[in-house]
Length: 335
Image 1 (cartoon, rainbow, N blue to C red):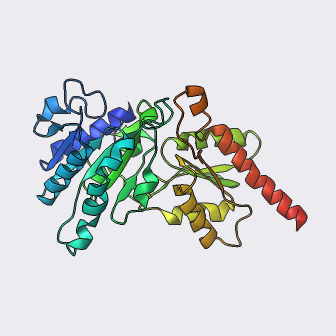
Image 2: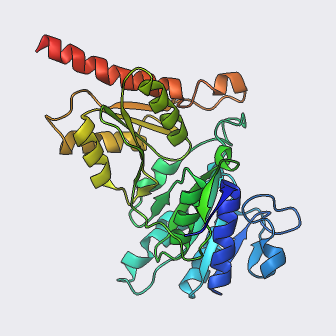
Image 3: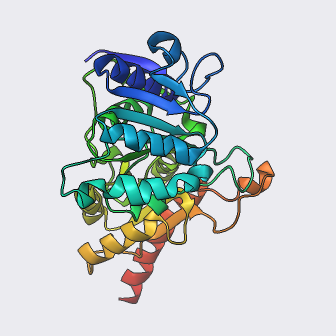
């Protein structure tokens, strides 16, 4: 399969371009997504496909998602953009009580094949209301699929899968990853099935489980740990719903230690659910308590120096991994 080096932004643009070309039912809608002026993954697409398929909308998140749901019911495959994830709450009723429930409430006769793209601005000193990673909200909603890519390859493959999935998909992009480069298959048929995690680095001593931006922190932490003889496996979840429980449990069954890292706040976050799964599935086999490294439970400060203390980092993840090893040592000594 032919590959080309590109950024995350370019990979998402390619996925949207190929979907628009492949299927006339696909169209895009959202704020400032059309040319001139579009600078993100939709740049250049309205010039190529026209403003009826790349549609600029008023600043109304509820209207954007509501229009997407109506179009989906009528047989279209809309890709709606909510520019900043903090504002997705304005469209929450449309997503939670309409899109996510259509398949159930119509006994499968009607679905809502919409993809909602949204961006997280965490780490860019944008303040308390422009920086939140709110994926845990939607993990709690039966009927919604939640996707968070960490690499350009995964971005293209997962976005393509989401667009052609028959259920509503929330596709979460991290602005800090938009310039991240990597090899990407250019084949229009390339997609990555939803619900399949990816082992980004194999290891034997501790499993570092993450998704999105902190996957790169976990890889950096694994490299640091390796300098001291610790073999860390890095598992990239890629999708939170459906969650690849088999890969998570399989990894931790081998290493017997786990650290979970994410940009959502730690309290009530995705890591809590994963830790509960590991406790249930591997009770008696874990060599140490499961560690979580996540955003601190506080509104995000606008000052960059303070904000840097809020999020997971390679140092925090490596320290948590060392605690799991130290806990094992203490348990063995006391035993």
